[in-house]
Image: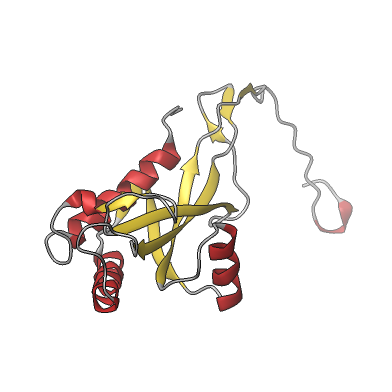
Length: 187
């Protein structure tokens, strides 16, 4: 049973994967892609913001995990992280022009599309582009106190979050079967 911070590990996988694909194609240094909120006054060129954590059940109803003959761990919870990836329009030195923003966003699309397979806790993760409706995009940006701007919307799923609850189960000691043949007679 792992007590690692899996959401932080998942975020790190996304950041490192994007940086690997973006440097030196559209970014000069890895730290030009930063984890930040819209309106932060940092000097990065691209910002990644996690704006939602959602429960997901990619494998149906989760089942307990055996931990031995008489113990079982509660099932993993699977989560999806939703990200916003956007260009820093407030970069203080060198600024950002409209063409630069499109180059950065195209590079980000290519990076997200080209990233190799991701894995966490021995389970595969899927990073995909999302296309929320314009009304949701507008509401998201407004909730962060910023005007809407071109951005990439990404989702990473299914992140396994292990439970720390382990319960004892009684082993099966005896099993009785009573079989009846066709017509209600015992065989």
